[in-house]
Length: 269
Image (cartoon, rainbow, N blue to C red):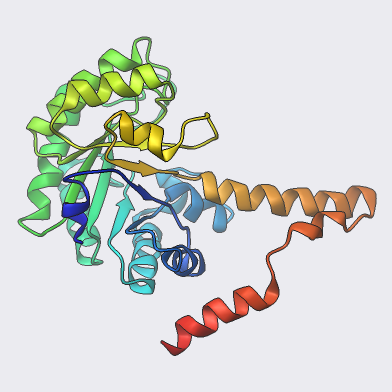
């Protein structure tokens, strides 16, 4: 099933690997598609999750690595396009499309302590430019409204207003990361029909895939969560060695033979 067809009915999970190995492992679990994570790529390089820390060239290398590792559709977490100006945004989107992605997401956050979101007219124009830069390629454009993550005083209302405007500007999938409650998720899905909605599950809120499917969610991503799970296990085990002289934290390690067999089978396919 194509990436576009996955969004037409039902609900699917699109987990987020951060490198070649994690992409191969997730593909072996029969997920129908994968998505990159800018945070995961940054943390793996010892960097904070900011566009200025990683930069577009390094981001594109990570995206290309994951696309090339698997035979699944890959959606690129492309932050705000790694450019403030529209010409730079368009050029970077074209470079992202050239990696072979099946989709890419553009967010409306520009960072900074004051006014962290692009003003709505400017944000809409950025989505319009990104859509035009895809230039007829079969690549789905996801628009992200970052209202919940950046402390907007009325994030639900603002996210709906922004996402409706982004859909009219050419976005085909809509996404408000940070929404957590059943009520808010249902309100977003209902307000944005018939466009498919992505929901981020970055922690265990008690909601399941079935719960989200019943609310009408089309796509579920986990963002940096799997990356942070891995880092959490690593830091916990290392701290027990450093502080307690205990190796008990190694008891949860993945089996060496399982990992070796997974990657040997991939190498020989």
